[in-house]
Image 1 (spheres, one colour):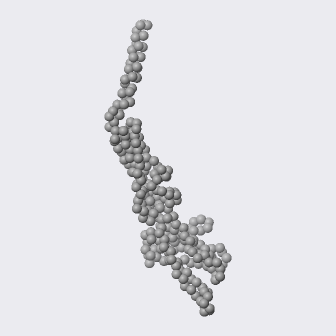
Image 2: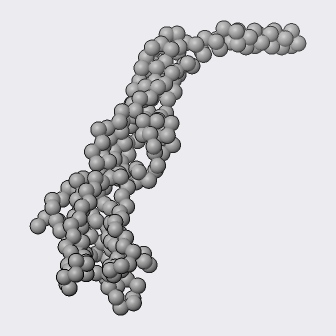
Length: 240
């Protein structure tokens, strides 16, 4: 019994040693000699956002993929054998009023020269909307804010001009009344020419109209933001 037990243990030990020295290295290298499996390259999902939302991300250089990866994800790249290489190329669009498509083209190559590719499309949609701050009425001799202030996210191409009607009621060569008409055109808007006569409003409740207030101009509507939140429709904006 003792002799049989020793021979059995010896055979098991030899078998284990044989697997360690011969079989195990073979199992690790068989799939790489030769390597016939291409690497895995999976791009992040395609995404879309408005021009305004893209601008609010504060991306100065959209061609910098290190920055894009923070907001739009990184690819999944792996291989069954060590030594896979990866690269990315960013194709920027011909911007059209802040809209276009950014392509992130990913490539993975293994040591056998096998290549896998995938692409992520970032679609940036036009969002023509801007805010105007209308100047207040002023009396002759008062300091006059002589500009129309506006806020835009860079998705618009605005042309702002004005014309003045000057009145001299007592013929003394001094201006008694000046009426200024503003023309604001957004070349990025899909709508055609339209006009809107902004009313004089009493915003501060002092009984006098002509206070400063803001308007949000969109393709089809004009809104006034309320101080407590929300917006009120002031009128339609479209073709005449």
